[in-house]
Image (cartoon, rainbow, N blue to C red; front, top):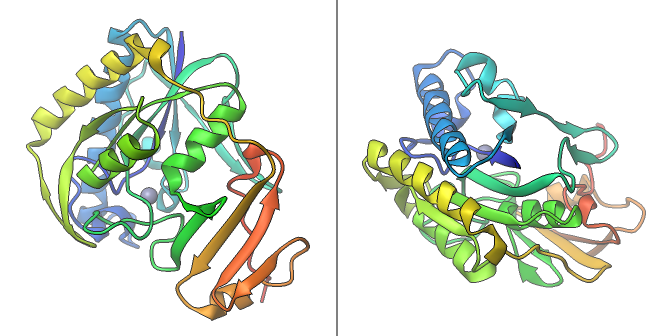
Length: 272
Ligand SMILES: [Zn+2]
């Protein structure tokens, strides 16, 4: 049985500051701390996978700042294999195919626009106000559920702050969750005891996998109407004019996809 784990950093246990996810200096103590939390939460999830009978676990480092290098700097459980998110003409997540029994998310954050969620965002923290699928607000958890769903693979589990867990309960009620902390403002939160959280991650991941027969694969009828509202209209200007992209508002771009795997392929900024 093969399980995939998508990681991010904002929702990790032990992460309570922007700099721990985004410090520009690779060797900043704050960023190193963040990477150590990433390894600890991910390894707890990997352990839970094997507890539940997984024979293969693949991990994607999904936090953009890391350039997929996080696990060259901190130790991933050697039983897990790294795979890549490839962003060429369109974004492809290697290894997402029908051989996976399910996918999990570690360190995930709530969608842009969630009140008192720690570092809530969708793709770009300070640039994007909201992202919608068929007019309904969604975030990165939905994008991954849809992408995996295209291969017939269900999202089974997600760990993040209380708001992320509430988002899962509202949109994907079959998804098991572990709360890592409680957001108190956009960049503030109160952490839960990290050792207790990691024990819970291991236990809850194993439960989610054992109960995977109850999970649903998220599929929507194509085509999908997507829209992104940027923080200011200059960001829409930079991406306006691409084929098939409309501009219903100064800050909003809208487009349509007929393949759920194109969910990450937003209009790109023109080269200056
Ligand atoms: Zn991130």
